[in-house]
View 1: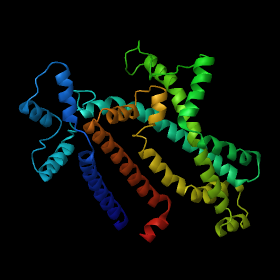
View 2: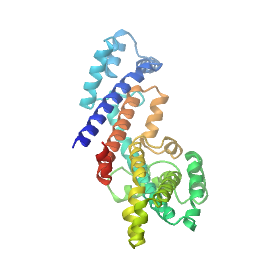
View 3: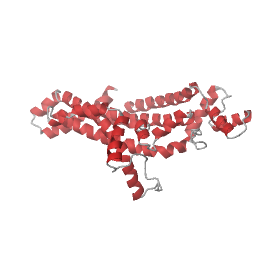
View 4: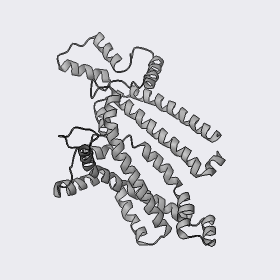
Length: 329
């Protein structure tokens, strides 16, 4: 019980620290989102005065004339209410609305791709490590080479081959623009077709890391005494592989999967840009380009919550699959 209490306490402190950094860092950056909105207003012939500036400051989440500690308390209160401010890039849309429109696309694309790459990579790595020197083991260098290839380069190759040359898959977008988004077979089929190339890019680029890591852990695990004992008892190879070797060798991969799953929310910015995919990565790039601090803060907050949440779940799950963790804590 103490193990779980300590875990929840640690992640609560980590969340508070992340919220505090999320408040401080944008205020240390050069530029001001209020000035950007006022410049746009002037370009359209609007009148800018002190009252206008004050109104925009309140609109974007706080009065900068107040002490920093008051702004900090207001920021925490707004976060608890789910109010992350107004986006400058997509003014006057709230940050939660902008993120809510793009986050499902990234979760479906990057999340499913990460799970597929992890399952395939760990499974093949376990088989390759179980019987080193086989044809499957000889494929490991090729997969690690693909892992070293930059995302954008691999994405451009797929676009050229499947979209430009063969014309069997679309090169850009998240769905056919003539369709109305909704939970119907036509739209879902279009989204799957448009998301195939970005997903293939992510899977192939990340497959080698999972395969190599699991393969090396399997080779190391096979030399342990409990594996030799199981073999001496005459247990079947399949049972030794599943129950003894793979179960212990997969533990580092579980921890790595937690980190990867947490960063699903941040998306794959380069991949989304190459394919013009309507995910959170493109929104983050737009926020950085336009000095949209409110949107950047909102996206960073979602990333923080996703990473902490995924690590907390895996930490709790880790204590279940490896009781030694609870015993040492």
